[in-house]
Structure formats: structure tokens, C-alpha cells
Image 1 (cartoon, rainbow, N blue to C red):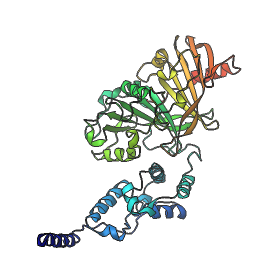
Image 2: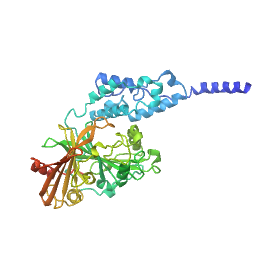
Image 3: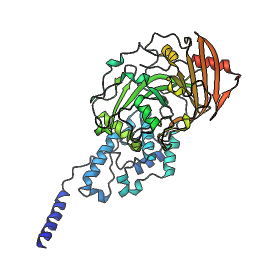
Image 4: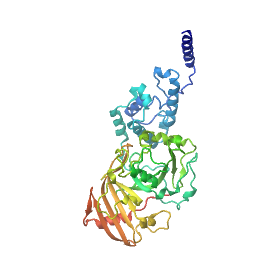
Length: 450
């Protein structure tokens, strides 16, 4: 009993001594707070500033070592990602993008951290407060017009040598074959006014078709290509300047320390690596943390898998193509371009058979896109849009609205136009606007690629 008493006394003494081992948490007045209305800032102060500001707000029990050490680590780490005390010094577009990220982190349950909420239940944001933030951000409330600083005009030098593109700092290599990967989905982003095309290599498509997405099969590679939105003379929103391509490479052994994925981003038509040092990877893994239940992948592949999966894992609605088409799965062809119709809340992707792709590929000495060679077939698939369940401010394809085909018999001369609509759907006989729609498909310029 005496030994137990001595050990208990020693433990108390050690506990008291540890209270003096407390490195400080730097604190200072706000330099430039986020530029937002008072009601928005109040919500952020209530639920975010405790960690994401230069004015830490610690409860009395947060002051007790060793818990204090964990709290200090969380606060310093949180500031590295977002610091609302200094965010106001950034351009308005970056401030708003940060708020979009914050909203998505909250609605996906990633913020506040679950362990933080367990001891600080008051940090949980109320649904009406989240709605207030969403109403303030108001995606699609204005037409595209703010150019991304990394976007590159389509009138650019000849394509660069993809094999010579530098890897990301830390060794993540660039994959020159990404332009030829197959279609997986498309996204209309109202938060930053970009259009995004998601492609996957053969392993990724097999994984999606089989339902092997939790986790994805090793060897799967995903590319997300982004363009700045641009309103055309036709009133449609087309891809404008090229912004970037992001690559994810699944290898659970090689990338064990980064959630099983290799991450990379290359910006501008010269495909400059995004990172300045190996620390860029924290931004990638941090952003994808909310969808760890989907193996860190935001995209819902358009497919009907061979096993039952939840609707927030794959996009089966968009995969239900009309029946009786010349090809049962036009989504298997490569993509030429895409656009959205704001008034109809629809997104369209133009696919081409090999002959059409050869005429529009940026690495071929190709004729103009209105001069497709004989044998070319174009397929324009149009979906009704729906909100992306993984990202507030984004819309993705939902139910197919129509699939239109144009076949070229001789250069520049279409042999016929066919339209299919509905689900299961059928061919629409002799559409009255066939000639107009034919010219639209033939006249769509390919989206700019490096």
C-alpha cells in the first residue's frame, strides 16, 4: 500500500510539473480579417475562430497538459490551412474560395473536427447558419467574368512536349497519357466559374464498372482538367482558357503516407508544377479528407456498377442512356469539348469516334473542327444538371436529356443527324431543327489542351 501511495504521489507531482511545460500559442490582433458582412463574420467567429485565427479561444480544460499540447498542435495546424485573421489581405476571389471550402468542410462533417466537437459541442454550426453562408456565397448568381490568374488563353504556342513536364516537388510524376483517358464525369463550378472534365485510365474505368471503389483498385489514375468558363455568342457557357490538370495515382503501398494516392497539379499551358516544395501534398490530402469514406475521391463516376453502391459513390442516373442508338455507350469515345446551358440547367459533352478525335487532337496537324474527315461520328450527350452532393457550388450530370449523332460521309458534309431522348428513351423521328443542330455539333471548337 505504501508503494501505491508513493506512486500516486509521484504521479501527482509529475502532473503538476508538466503544467509548466507549455509552449505558447502565438496570439496577436487581426491584421486583415476576411472581408464579409457582419452576420457572416459572426458565424465564422463563433464556429471557426477558436482554431482558425490569431485569437485562440481555449476552454479551461483545454489549458490542462497533456491535452493542451494536442490543442496547440491543432490550432497551429488549422492556421496553416486557413487563418481568418489574415485572410482579408488576399484577393477577393481567394477569400470567397476559402469560404466555399469552409462550407463544404462543414456540410461534409469534416469541420469542426469530431474530436473537437466531442468536448466543444457549441462549435457545431446550426443548419440555418450554414444556409446563411450558402446564401451569401450564391454560386451562379453572376455570369462568368473573373479570369483565373493561372488560365492561359487558347491562342497559345504549339503544344508542349508532355514527356518533358517536370514532376511535382517530392517526386510525383506527370503522366503524359492523360489526354487520351476515358470520360468519367464533368462538373459545372459556380464557385469559381470553371468547367471541369474528369477522365480515368483503363484501371479506373474497370474499378468503377465493377464497383471496386472502396478502396479504388491500385493502378487507377484520375485526371481532372479545368478551364475558365466563357460565355459564347450562342449564350452557352463554353471552356475558355485552360487552367490546370490535377492527377491522382492510386498505389496503396507507394503512397501509404498520403492516403494511398499520389497527388499532383500542373497549371497553365506550360504545365508548371503547382507545388514549391514537398509540403504541397498537405493541401491535397487536407482538401480530400472529407470524402475519405469514398477513398478520398470527390468524383461520382458515371457508370452502372456490377454491385450495389450508394448514390454518393457512383452516378447511375447519368449512365442510363437511351435505347436504340448507333453505339450503346457513346461515353466510351474520347471527349472533344463540353458546355453548359444556364437557362436549361443542362450540361453537354461532345464525344467523337477515333476519326473525329484524330481531326481535333491538339497534337495532330488537324483540319478545322468544321472539316471533319469522312467516317467521323460526333455524339453530343446532354444531361439535366443536379447539385453535386460532395461540393456546394458545383453541378454534375443527372438524368440524360438527349443524345445527338452526326455522321460525316464526306469532308464537311454530314450524312445524317439522329436524336435520341428519354429513359429508356427512343429515337426522335425527323426533328425539325436537325440542320441547325448538325451545324452546332460540327462547329463546336475543341477545348484547349496543352
